[in-house]
Image 1: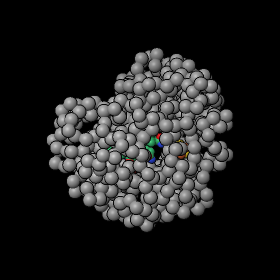
Image 2: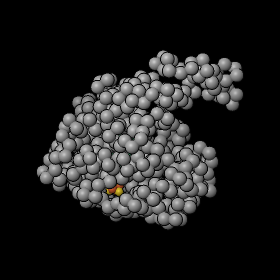
Image 3: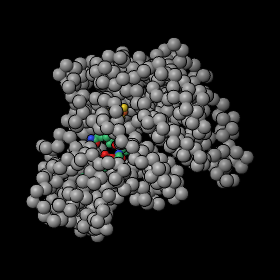
Image 4: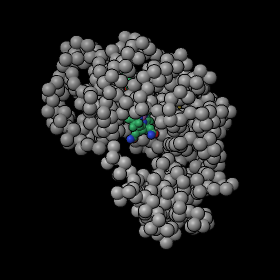
Length: 509
Ligand code: B12
Ligand code: SF4
């Protein structure tokens, strides 16, 4: 039971709602009357309504994001009918821009736009005292981060073991990439470093192992990034894992030095590149130094064990299939472990809309508002690129095909052109993007490499088998049996006691 319930539907169970924890930590005198209740978008709205009503709240605050608008709307519609006396307050990025007129906003009593860490408690106080001056939509003044209570003690022990732990040393971004919501949050503000590190120390003592920094650009304030890396390096232990979002062209010597102290697998950098085309970069107001970027990638791949997750976007204004393909090839040559291909989304409030007429930008009206067509890429081509992105995830990023994937573009062939050919071929064969079992996928890769690519099965089969068996499997799939020496391969995959090698290792541990 609680008078005020703070809730949201996370994208998946493993993602904890960090923003809500900030709100709860800053409820002040209302803290005792408030509770957090998290759900995820895969739960049934009826079940969520039942649980929320069981808390008998006077006020429910919902965190609204691009991934949960539709599902949350279904929840609110039912609450409105079952318990119209409950006051509903909305906040979060999806209702912070183009607020008026949204159907979810019509259903709510109040909306707070922007960073509501302090404003939510103020609005609740006004609601509980029937303040007649309270407007339906209240913009939150930017809170001074030094005034905020930090939320980290609100991660439960269960969160620490089962969920992604988000942390934040700064807010805001000084860059102006037009597709990104953070480009609107220009002033970059730091959480006082000593308090932040103290909180990290507590989390470590409580058993946190993996930290995902949500700072828009971790390597912006080098004094702070160095202090944070040094702090974690001094406390390093084998399961520690730190994820940071970085700008790719800023890695001075001191930072490099610190980064290279971490063992392989401890650091992951999410590096937004988005485009390699100069004209497109200008269109989206993103400045990048591609030479520095290449040099930094070279350093990270050759002298550190950092896992690089690099992002490109399909569908930016002015980006054609050729320019995107050239960029993809450049990126493949830099050897990041993962390349995430995102499809452009029109996020509410972002200035990318200024290109709508000139570049014929047509977006889906449904969340996540992805581009359907533009001047350079028609609908059919964007559909092909959606499949490319999906299949790239399955084959290129998944880590399931390290030996065989590069054979798709062996020799002088363009990685992009070859993988696009594979993607078109795979769609024709399978007629689906989802639900392809790993063994089926392995067979498709085998068929493509020995068919359209024309490689001999004597070269392809061992590579596919090695990929297939690398996670401890020891059987030889039926489609490979005619091409490999089955008895030798199955024996090689077994330990002395006859169990698959991986299983045997676990038994003796
Ligand atoms: C963690 C995260 C995710 C997680 C999900 C987290 C979860 N809980 O489920 C994952 C990785 C799955 C994810 C995915 C995506 N994300 Co994301 N993500 C973030 C990220 C990095 C951190 C969020 C956070 O904790 N911020 C820190 C807290 C303090 O801020 P906050 O959450 O905004 O909360 C404040 C306010 O919004 C408000 N508030 C929040 N809740 C409430 C509730 C009430 C009642 C009130 C009054 C106020 C309020 O007050 C809070 C405190 O100031 C943000 C970027 C960022 N750094 O914020 C992007 C961000 C939220 N994501 C974004 C996008 C676009 C996506 C994707 C579409 C990206 C993609 N793949 O193309 C996907 C969609 C997923 C899907 N399934 O469809 C956009 C949001 C767009 C939107 N309108 O919602 C953001 C802002 C990134 C950006 N700069 O453009 N994301
Ligand atoms: S894409 Fe990255 S660098 Fe650009 S505005 Fe968004 S957070 Fe900042």
